[in-house]
Length: 90
Image (cartoon, rainbow, N blue to C red; front, side):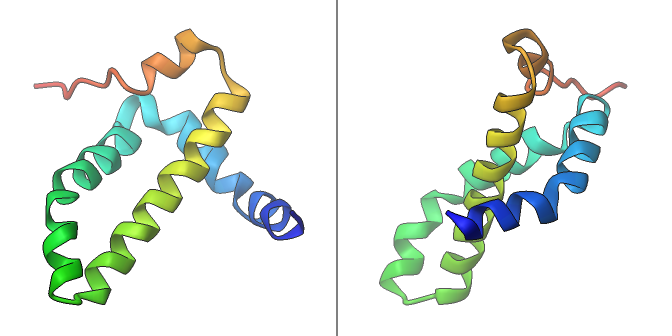
C-alpha cells in the first residue's frame, strides 16, 4: 500500500544504520529477547485493560517486523545469521 511505501522510505536510513551496526551491538536480538520475555505479561495486561503495555508490545512487534523485512530483503541467509549470533565480549 501507499502507507507502507512511505514508511519504508522514511525509515530506510535508520534500517541501513542498524544493518551496519547490529553485528557489533546486537540491538535487534536484544529487542526480540525483551519482546519475547514480556509476552507472558500480555494476557494479564489485556485482562487488566493495561492499554499502555499492550500498545508498547504492539509497537515493539511492529518495529521487529519492519526491520526483519529489510534484513531479509537485503542480505543472504549467512549474513542474516550473523545478526542473531551476537555474543557479548567480556
